[in-house]
Image 1 (tube, rainbow, N blue to C red):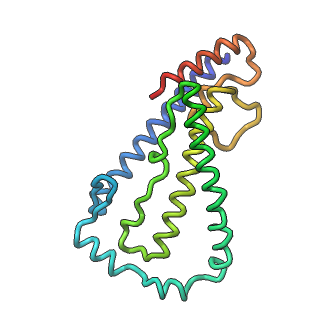
Image 2: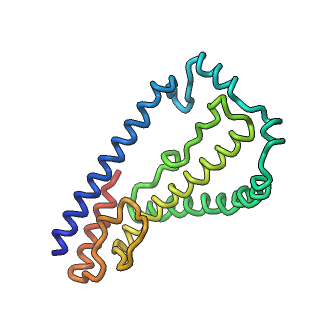
Length: 199
């Protein structure tokens, strides 16, 4: 029974990955729709589009005097997280640099998760750009940390949970069934070996 269920889960996960790839292709197709191209780390818009963006930009002064009081009040709570985020960033980066080398696991590429490109949008003023940079860093960092954690979990404890979870990382479907003790040590070695072969 467990083998049949795992095969069904594997098929569903494969469909999810295929849909994610399709979504990425559609998102990247927007490059032609919005007349931009990626040149290295830069995103370049056609001159006419950039001029329209410049005209649509709200001045930083007007933006500042019209900001909602609730946004001003929440600002210190949002930006106050920069210190814990930096500590987390340093911590997970050092962790994977040391431990993943010891385990023979390929390291997570930080730049695949933390992407800064909103500064190329001419319709954003300086405050909006700084907010976007901060959000890009925070969400990218969390995803970067999640991938490091998922590889660590796959190495040390690749066992599904008995309780239902709202969201799981992409490695979870391949974990061992909860309560299935048969050949646990052998299966753990197989899963670790598979992880070590990943590039």
